[in-house]
Image 1 (cartoon, helix red, strand yellow):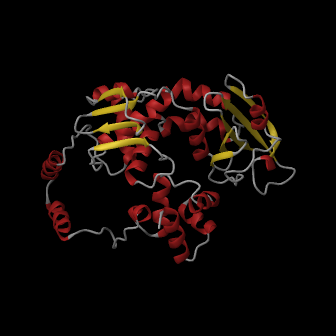
Image 2: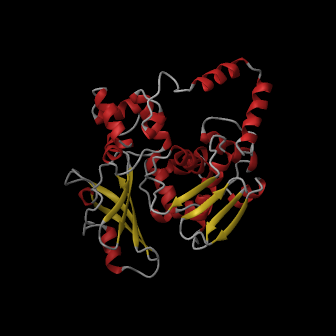
Image 3: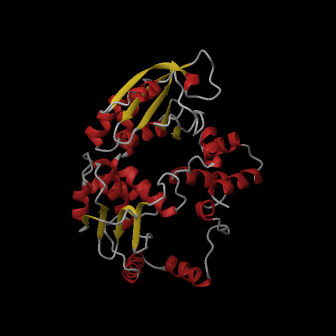
Amino acid sequence: MDVKERIIQKRKELGLNQTELAKRAGLKPPAISQYESGVRNPSYEAMLKLSNALGVKVDYLISGIETDKDYLLDPMSEVLVKILSKLTVFKKEEIFNYILLTTGQKKHIEALSSDPKQYSKYIYEQYFEKKLPIDVFKLANKLDLKIIFGDINKEAEAILFKRNNTIILDSELKHNARIKFAVTTLIGHLIIPWHTDEIYYYRKKGKSTLLTDNTEEMEANSFTTNLITPPEELEKDLYVFKSKKASLTELKELAEGKYEVSLTSICNRLVEQYNDRFAVVFSDCNNKITKTFSNSIELKDIGSDIDKRSMASELLKRQSDVEEFKEDMVRATTWIENAHDNEYVYESSVFNPEYKSLLTLITRI
């Protein structure tokens, strides 16, 4: 049984339909539908909301391990928890530092929290004084973390060796935004205290960062997203789109100019912030939809043909040698299931000649 099956099982045990679960969790019904169909996995934040709504621990949704009221502890762990509850803060810190020592960990920053986002917040405020863009190589230098490019046999895009305080990036990794995301994610594994493995991989061969059901990968992704696109700053920049249609050319300027991240990253954050208005679609030169990102808009299924009425279809016919954008109003039925015939959406699409792929951003009017 995997994540999607455990969500379905617990939802049915509670006698809830997808809409009722969505309301209880503070999510949208299409998001629940995508989680349960396996189109995409919940983010770490969504997993927290789902666990609360279903009355289970996050670890159960991810691993299937049942817990009692709070935790499933062996006798020694239970005794340790009782002892710790009686100790002073100073004694707890001594024990914490000893645990780090015995597990080969280091206390890289002064922040201490069980929430990965708090580590991002601390670094953003204390190391960068709330100034953007985040320079991850500067951060790595502050952490005495060595970053080198090397041949890692395409095993992954990047590997962290914690004991050596070293990240090896695949020598074929060229795009700055992708390098930034890879390095930041592995830094997350480095500084989050309970990430105790000696080696961590970023985008391991055959694996997807979006479809991961590994708790630590989800936490590291959450750390990364909240560090390189700080919520408090991004919300101000995206507020204009609360009532305005979005253009990929405008968002690209924001992504590359202010945050130095990929256009896809900014588009996904826009969907997260205003999920009733926006959705993202990825498609390829085989004229097929390959991936979607939407929390409340019911898009056409993955594997569906790109509608000939779309801007994406026009870009695909030309397949320019340079990046090309095209945007206009199109009928909602071009991209959305069960849309009304008289409904329109604003489509902004871009063709990437390097990957021979298309990114489409839908604004529901």
